[in-house]
Length: 62
Image (cartoon, rainbow, N blue to C red; front, side):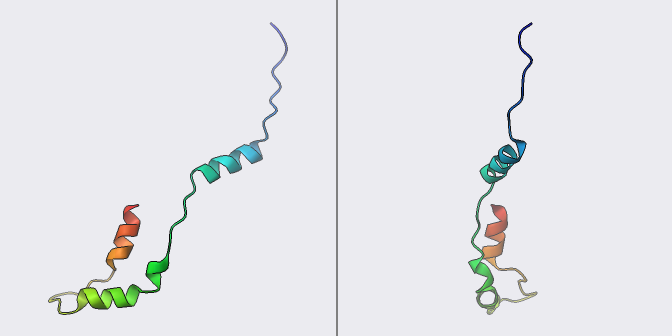
């Protein structure tokens, strides 16, 4: 039937490549202006105040 297959893959390297392939970086700059953005969103708003800024909601949609 031929030669026996010898697996020469290094699974530590292969796994690291797969992890890096699915990696993406997100900017967390919205945290620095969280309170300011909420203050602007809640200014003159009747009823219950917003608890989370729009930038957080947009980030979660990613």
